[in-house]
Length: 368
Image 1 (cartoon, rainbow, N blue to C red):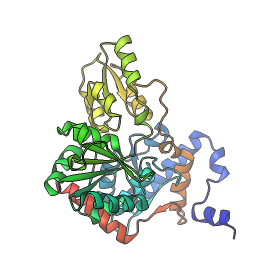
Image 2: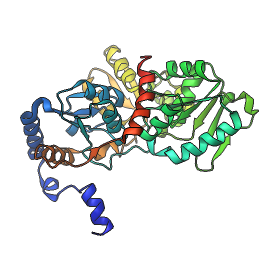
Image 3: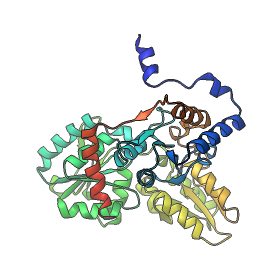
Image 4: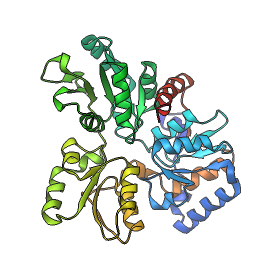
């Protein structure tokens, strides 16, 4: 067996038969498997999924909510997570040992999560401890790999979401003098700034050059931001906002805190995916909004609120490419393989990693 055959055996490729089916055929196959398996199957769908997939979701939500809902569905033997790899990992960590989590397409990763691997993080931790001694507590955004969650859990830290980042950063400062925030520098910077920490007291760790980027006195550093970002949200710019202010001055702008600091500062509002959805839902009919987040979600919000004038803050924005790898052919193939007793793309987190990662998750959930 050569290396290509070994890879295909571990993560088989989508059969051509599924590529040749019509949308109607694929939808019928998905619908039929769901009906036959009933409560033994649970299908959570992230907000950024395509409409062709999200229509079959048993629940919509962000990554942590969907992982928690998966854990709550004790009757579900198979959980087919329509999201990206780190989300399925979190579901596996939180669910029971008799429950199995699958990802329809193993290529569905997250560029942000991939910007902090364990080797990089351990090297950074060693060097930062040399600089700051035992004064740092690590925090990681849930948009990170299980290995990074485990690293954080091992050293007494916790996970955070875009909804609770402020409260978790406040908690972290009751534990240590400084924090290391992984892997999204923008969420970390925006959160710390909103809590009153000056930008001048935030440093950036570059995992590529293995350097701390900071021009002041080291003793003034309170927040160390990992140099990572969301490739979707970083594409919203100050120029987008300035253009909108000139052409549509009455339109309100709401963005996700994974956007750059200067974009958040110039917007009318910023918050998590749920905050954005709820804000639009609560706004009066006829109101106008420009939304700075993933395009599949923006388009869905537009469809669900025809009484409001809603656009994307960046009209040239594309959907999240890795999230979009989950499509109807892969979903149908995954479900039929599970039902036939020959499943693929099982997500299984190593037990030791899972235990430390759960510590990090539990420290957050205990403060929810």
